[in-house]
Image (tube, rainbow, N blue to C red; front, side):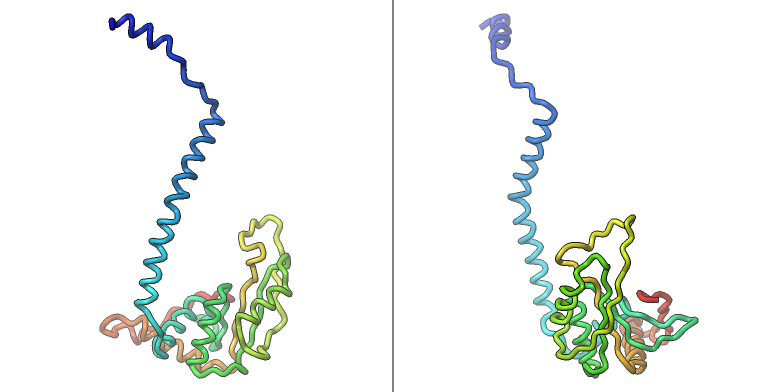
Length: 214
């Protein structure tokens, strides 16, 4: 077949459909979705395998390990003394019921009885307070637990909040009566945890400049 014949043959072939921008975008999005529908389960399975292996590596916690983890958790999320003002009391707040449950386990391990613990819900006024109260009482799991009057956060129209919907239950504040001694124990436990390998930082005063509630 000569070159001219080939050119005529190609010219006579039906031309492909000219797609609009919208159709190209639709097909591209469909291709991406098809890819992730296959890839996402594989990645989630791989992530779960790593997480499960790490959980097995930790295993059951001893009382000593609970005290270490609980003291560090408090130093991250709890109210601490400031240079200009000493609190010397346990005051902890978090929105994750698992963290609250572990902190209560920590307090029990530290010798704090349930009667000394007081709870308070911090929640936005647009949320369902009654549902939040039921949620946190169930999460706490302490019969006749003492709940102070909730702290209601006023809504600011200009603020775009992400923590909304039926899964939002606010935060739970955990306070301990007569807790100066336990607070000083936490200071000591954190000093030990944060000390260097040779213990050189053991005598260093913990900063405690910030406070989640101050």
